[in-house]
Amino acid sequence: MNLAGERRLYSRSGEDISAAFPDVVEAIDFAGVIDGELLVGGTLRSNRPTGTFSDLQQRLNRKTVTRALAGQLPAFIRAYDVLEDASGDVTGETFLDRRARLEALVAAADPARFDLSPLVDFSAWDELDRLRTEPPDPVIEGVMVKRRASPYVAGRYKGDWFKWKRAPHVVDAVLLYAQRGHGKRSSFYSDFTFGVWTFDGERDVLVPVGKAYFGFTDAELAELDRWVRANTTERFGPVRSVRAEADHGFVVEVAFEGLARSSRHKSGVAMRFPRIARLRRDKLPREADRLETLAAMLPPETIKPDVRPKGRGPR
Image (cartoon, rainbow, N blue to C red):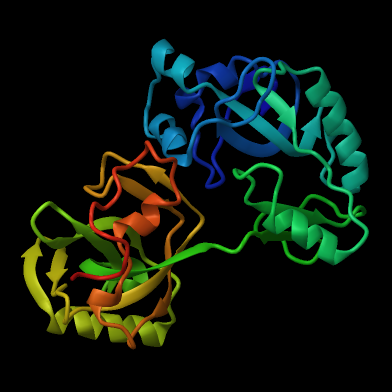
């Protein structure tokens, strides 16, 4: 946004992240407020994102960014909509009218830092479904459907807008740690770290690959909480380690939007937006997925795959 000469960049939660992206903020030379996606990568010739979500987090988690890091992981905005321009508030206008204003605004902006999300033409839902599931670029997560006459409404707007994302990736993982939640969940263990199997050179072990704290019902939360309390092996402050053995443990189906390399996890991978999709009471931990399943979703050089033969669970 750039209003009254003040330039700011905000996250979807309303946090001011301007300091982490000075390269983008410095390029805001227009008056107005736009809605868009912050991406990492691209060049002066093409703003195709080449960075991963993990790369984006490297910049998000910093109060200041060095010139070297900004050069290594340049950022740009893919513009979706406009709330205000030099004429004032335009949220009450139709999407098509706002789109015309947005096109003019982006056309005059720095092409290295701003580009325009393309409109997708389709004549049938089946055609749009194919574009959603088989996008022209693997980084595309889905499509956003908006009525042409729709206004811009803040929040999780339903009715005139619909985010139609690709089906998530899913794996079966084993619960490793649990932590108490917050607010109304403060009396429950509701934040769960889970892992998959890999071979460490001597034996099969479980390595953490993610953490989730939603996706389950209240009844399932109560069940998980009881299981954690009955199967705690160690305590580390608010965190409990739980039994996670080949024949004793709790398996959950984890859904996630993507995968990136990570130095924070022993596994070398991190999931994007993981959530618990299903409680797999029908499975033993030995039947959970292996790290090689996740490795197959990454470029070959990103992670060293499991050296054991392909399969599931410990042998």
